[in-house]
Each structure stands twice: as structure tokens, then as C-alpha cells.
Image 1 (cartoon, each protein chain N blue to C red):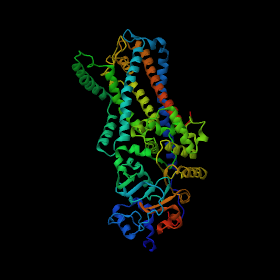
Image 2 (cartoon, rainbow over the protein chains, first blue to last red):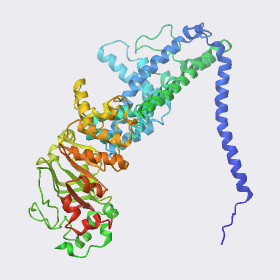
Image 3 (spheres, helix red, strand yellow):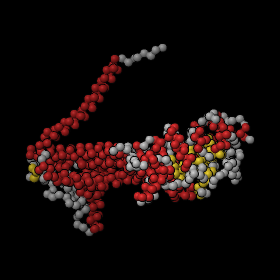
Image 4 (cartoon, rainbow over the protein chains, first blue to last red):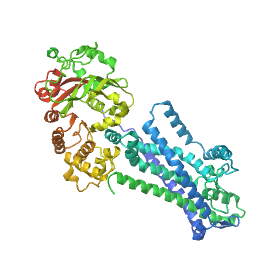
Length: 307
Length: 313
């Protein structure tokens, strides 16, 4: 008895139809990116001059540059990383190396992390305002007998809020990176009389570093463009000076785009500056992503014994 | 003698059944093989050192006993992996542990440096004595224990660091920072493991560039660098080609002058070639333990003979 092919011509058409549809989907992604980047490049490229990058906005943001926003973004992101990486990696190490995988505490922590990742960023912004500024900051002022130094929007609170927003990403990527270190590496280290902490520090962290750094850089790229978490916690509409302490407010690229797009007194005059700012933000994000890819490739090559 | 009786049903010897067997399920088996079983249901009052019943007494005892297990059982959750194992490991000799897959030989080996601690849900009964001291009494210092009882694994597992950093890893962990001392010990360990001539000019290169056999000798050097008393080896040659394997075997013959070596192996010819004592395990039990010469020429237990002659396993 032979097996009869009961597939009609329809199945053939379905097959090629699916290929076409998935091809279109893939192409659309490229097209969308091309439209966004192309549009911004065409209208924004000529705005970018040294003067634009190095001077402050003038005349109600219809003239001048975006240097304070670039400076503020950098300060914000650096401060965020300082808070974010030790906490995130520490939590990942605890979860993966020390916590018993079946304990209720571990399960609760994991549940919290996955839910934290789903919280809208504006909620983080409001949380930052309520917790860091109203609660922590004001109490710090009261305890230290200061007027209002900590209990107001500031660089440090914005950085902390942003760190909180990115914490789940960093924990998950760091834990994933630790998971990729083979078990026999741990055993080799422990069998040589290393303590668990020595094993973490000398064997696991170096090998997990590519993954950890990738997560860190991606969180920076994402953090650089976030507006919602910082608009209540530290970002300023316009400042005539640069922040010189963590308790100062600051200007930020993403927030600056938002402000220029919605609050400008003269939309026509602001438009080229707006395009230029968006382009700077895109280039910054792109460079950070590129750095993540290159760094990961280099560290992987080094671990594999080449280079 | 029990061993002249007809052999027990094949399935009780099936290695796969060992893993699935729960303590409760092992009872019928125990009834089938009452005298081969180490785990007599009725606890025998003080066991004699040499028990002809279980055939685990060693007839020739050259060195001091450095490691001893006493009624040692180990459970992975509900699965019993080791049942009342009693074995004495002699100093400066090679002790081989043979047996089919899943018989518990690796588990026993990993119990000696408490590597099983790393696995969740492991529970043990009985004791293991190292220099007559209970391993669990050293519980606060499992780190120091592992320095004194080193381990070489089945697959070469050098760290993705330079050859030099691999060898001195254990020393660095102990807090040795003096460059001259590190270099001297690295050279000494690499000489002992027969790798020095091959790598003396490339110590800074990644250990991962070495061949499999060289990597395994590097792992042995790394283990020797912290000067352990005992070296546990879990099928150290099974991932290597024959030439690399025989180099490791020669190395073991050399190392046993200074170290006590316990080696788990699948390869019976290897056990016969390199070991002074051989333990045969089956289904989590130590079936027979004696001088290698006796085990391979005149085993006292039928199951040992069957395994050695290739009737199963």
C-alpha cells in the first residue's frame, strides 16, 4: 500500500504565500528604520555644527545648541550606571550562586523582577518623585537640618529612578551570563580550595563579563532616551548653568526633544534644532549599541583564547 | 559461600535500575541477594575489618589508611545513590573504582572532597574519615579540605586564562602573591605533570590553545600546585585519545610515589594497569574491594568476575 500525497495545490500556494508575508514583515522593519533615520538625517544633518554641540539654547530654544543636554545626559547615565551595575550584578550573583532555587524568597524575588520589568516608565517617574524626593530627600534634609537641598528634583534622584527602571534588565542579563558559565568551571575552582566568593570573583565574573557588560550598555542606551522617569525627578526645562553637584537639576536630550516639540514659542524656528537633537540622540544610542556589540565580541574572543 | 549460588536475575544488575531505585524498591533486591548486599537490613554489630561475606577486605595492607568510609550512604532526594559503602583508601597507592554506568562510583569519589555538597537535595548517612577525622566535622572548612583532597575531572576544564594563571590559580586563592614563589611552584607542578618542556616558553598563552591531553595534564599540574595529599580523578582519560591517555597513565604511576590517588574508570584494562587496589561497585554498593591483582585474577564475588570478563556492564 502506497502513501498518497493528499496535499492539493492550495498547500503549495499557502507555502509561498507565507514566505512572501514573512519577507514583507522583515522588509518593513528595515523600511521603518530607514524612514526614521533617513528623515532625521535629511532634516537634522545640517543643523549639527560644532556650535550646535557646544553651546546652550538661546532665545527660548529657537537658537543656540544643546550642550547642556548632552552634558546632563552623560552625567545622568554615568551616575545611573554607578548605582545600577553593582546592585544588578549583586542581585544576579545572589540569585544564581547563593539562593536556593526552590526557596520561597527566591521565587518572590524573581516574581518581583519580572513584574518590575513590566511597570510603565511613567510609574517609575512618579515613584521616584514620591519615594526618593518626597520621602528620602526631605527626611535627609530634616535630619541634617538643611533647608531644601535633597528634597527636590535632582540629578541623583533621576539617576536612581532610571537605575530602578533598568534594574530588571541588568539582573536578567547578568544572571543569563552567569548561567552560560559551564558548571565544570565552578567545580574546578572549588576543587582547588577556592571559596565560593573567590570562585565568583575569579572565575565566574570574568567569564560572565561579556554578557554583563552587554546588559549594562544596552540599559545605558535605553536610559539615555527615557523621558518619563526623569521628568518629575530631575530634568529641567531650561537651565542657564550646568549641573555641578548631584543635587542640581539638569537638562537631558530626550526631555529636551519633548520640550522643544511641545513647548516651543516658535515651532518653525525650533524645528531644525529639534531634528538635530533627535539625530544626536540617535547617534548616541547607536554608538552605545555598537560599543556593546564590539565589546562583547572582543571579550568572547579573549575568553576563547584568541586575541 | 554465597557466591557459589546461581547468579541473581539480570535486571538487578542492570545499571539503569540503580538510578531509579528508591530505598523502598531496593528491599526486594536485597532479599534476592542477601549475602552480596552490603546493606543487610539488620544492622550487624561492629563490622569486622575484613569481611569475607562482603569481600571488601583488602588482604594486603601496605600503607596507612588515609580515607575511610564507614556505612556511608548517599541520597539524591529520594533516590539512594550509595548504600552503606565501606572502603579504606591507602596512602601512596592508586585505588581504582570500577563498575557500570550509574553504579555510584563518581558519586563516591565526589563524596571524598564533598563536591556533592554543591548539589541540592543531597543527604548522607554514615561517615567518611580523613586521617581518622569525620569529613563532616570539618564542615566549617570544606575549603581547606578541598585543598588537601584535590580533584581532576573527566573533561579537561582549564580556566580561560593563561597556562601560568591556571597552574597558580589555587595558590592565588590561598593568598600567595610573591611572584618568585608562584613561578617556582608553577614550574615544579608542570614538571611533575610532564608538561613543562612543552609549555615552558608559552606560559603566557591561553590554556585553551593546548591539546586535550595537554589540558588534562595542565589540570593535574593545577591540582598538584596546592600540594594535596589525595588526588581524586573522575575518568581522567575518557575524553582523551589513546596516546594522551597512556601519558596520563604513566604520570599516575609516577605521582603515586608522593600522592594518594583514587581514580574512577570505565576502562578495566586501565584499572588493571595502573592501580594497586580495585573496588568494584554495582547499584550503589561496594561489591568487592581488594588488591588489583586479586580482583583481576581471582575475584571472590561472582558479579565482579562477570563484570571483569565482560558479561555485563
